[in-house]
Length: 346
Image (cartoon, rainbow, N blue to C red):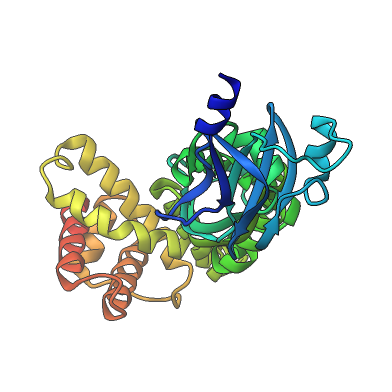
């Protein structure tokens, strides 16, 4: 019976893997009912590595080339199996092949805004996305930590874990780089380099090499973007408070004009608010105009009835005219605001 069982056994003389699909990281050679002959050939192609595993223990690793399997070429396996001389009979061991090609265009992104510390803004919630590429660099470590005894291990199987690693280290990358948010948004290459420095050691811990990471976009949520736009506007006017008030007023004028004509802005409360804004507008702008302007009789009478100085009303209207000429206000908005001011002062 023993002789018949030996005869029925199938022996392997060539061990190799022809990759049949993209995205496969690890593949187990089918060994069911098979044994490897002494002197068999192991063929490892370029962009591949092979790992022998005996009874669950990772043994010898082979790079590209054709290898004759003997105790000399399998030193770790020889030690594990306690061979003290050349083995002459076939042996059984699991063989795993690993693709070392770059896995390109792997996507990453922030599903929700993440909060980072920023030296200019204190704290910023940002969104970012890009792609990265990686490869298997340490088959033994990748086998013991990730792929294990599975027959096939794909990039999709580890995609979620790698994306989580990227998101986990974005805040650390920004903090360690000491790069302000505005510089990150303007120099995405700098951001990518800082993030790569944080991620490369984490990839190496599981037998992977992070080859390249790109940042394709960095942005703020819409509400924070509005705040940033306002801060940029403040930066443009500098420390001159009068100029800043002019900037703020110019931003608000279209809303005042809409409020005076829309249904939601009508009524005594809306009129009072519009009147207060108009008077404040006149007070601010009048300080920046030439003194001594005299109002026409009809405007003066209206202004005196409302307790407002005539030059303030004239200054307001002249400044609105300047804003209209510069394109900040449309003619329709100017006419609406002019009518509103005169009407509310009656």
